[in-house]
Length: 487
Ligand SMILES: [Zn+2]
Ligand SMILES: [Zn+2]
Ligand SMILES: [Zn+2]
Ligand SMILES: [Zn+2]
Image (cartoon, rainbow, N blue to C red; front, side):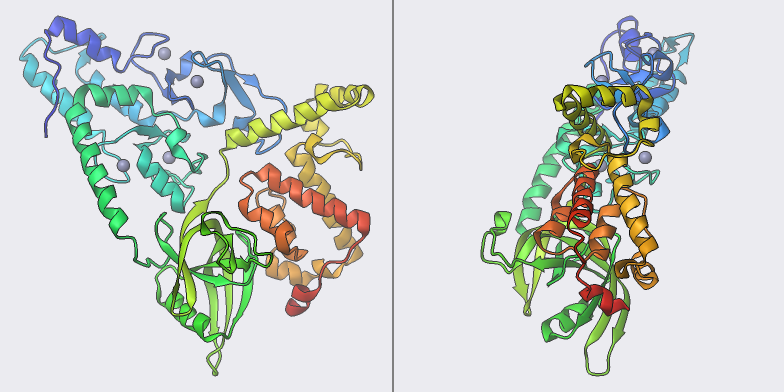
């Protein structure tokens, strides 16, 4: 392994080495360094004054209600996105082992000592996903650092941090996420040869992978993997589906699914209208967006048919497909939501601009509720004609919950105890609620399909609220097809 040792004299080197781990505010080695969403690092004590963020109701957890204006870019950063930078914290510890009173102890045998320091630092810089030197270090909101590419690969099949299992809260398109500047500078300064080597091997590997990519991995979910596809149902994440498998091609497919370790398959709706489906074009019988399902229960009937209960894991988009023994298999990408901070920005912007656009009188009303802080405005009754865009995400949920609880009291058939046993009790989580509502109301076709490609919790909650308003307005009855199947 080649290491680029700084070749200057000790007197010149020492201060510049220490600068690598110095806070640019207090000019001291970082103390409890925080990771900022813009890629900068700051001691916790050097953080600008924290204030309450307004106009945000979702997710609305305590740490997300506080924020500050960034010294560097002036943007509002949410406290919940500024986890302790674990790697920078470790690097400071390593540096300080060679330091007394703020000076590096490198006076004797400079080369040897420095080499030891460089080696100790290098030992901290392996990515915990690929176990090689971290390339384009991306620090997650929970404070863990990986190669940016590795985070992208993780996000393809999970939204949890590989180290601490906390939610990653990053958008799927991580190429746009800024790297951890301080860690990147350190790696570039000391290990530039290894970085160049890494980039080269990576480029070669990618080239090779393009030639392969035909394997069926039971759909464990890395981009580029294929998934067997069942066409003919609209299903949602976290929701169960009950399938009756009788066609020979799907019997074969399910046999293979059951033999695979993950028991996963994709479910897609028919493309009834024949609308073009992204890069898939016109020729295929299914819609492009669907849900990855995992089999919970499989009952093989004596005549070869089977009954299957499967639960939705995540949404996906087919990017390429081919026929295999009569059924489709598809290469796919996972569909994930925008990051929480984008979600909050969208809510804030929409609710504020709607409020500004409203007539003078109603604006005055809104202002008086705003004064009383978001928490108490959550308790205000929601006017029946309030535009959905003007409501906070929590208010949208409340509008829906009020409706569903009222219908439950009335004993409607689509909220029969058996329906709730099958699909779960009324959820008060805005992520889950729209999927649940679409399932129990059996909202089919393009309306329900929107939930599969909308990438924001708020957009899906608005859709759910629209259905609720529609129901209230027309007093329409849900299709009882699915319900009678359960009862
Ligand atoms: Zn500081
Ligand atoms: Zn910033
Ligand atoms: Zn990596
Ligand atoms: Zn983590």
